[in-house]
Length: 207
Image (cartoon, rainbow, N blue to C red):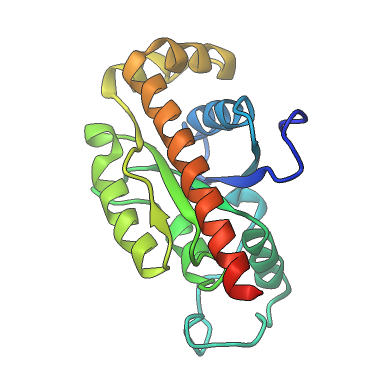
């Protein structure tokens, strides 16, 4: 968390969208978390889906139609966590030209909690995870989120170079790769602009 951020800081959740053993995702997730917390006006928190073993989505009514609170205690806690945020970064590997099932399940359990908030993406895999991100953009629009134009796509050569690296070593490589670092700076700028604009709009509508 960025202790220097002012009281009106944006709360950004970095959602780590892989739970597999030996996952790579933690390296870019922790790096982008550090980049966010190094930016003025942002308090970022890592949300690891390993800590949120949500049941497979089985609600009798779609969250977009339901007005009541979730009956499952863990889903209710997930709802409160997501509702507290001003924006999100989804860290998603690409599996078989798509993103992970655990991330889709986490998205599907909620609706209004995602609405009118910006979301950015960090991905890796085939073509830098671009196909997974493009699919996630469609889901984000359906959830009434505002996807940022820029995403961080870890290229194959950087992915391979950091496969066995420690977290600090991987972070150093990302920061030293101009197009990766530049993409991170761009999503931070876009999250900041959209985060403040959409928070003001939500507050105005709620007033």
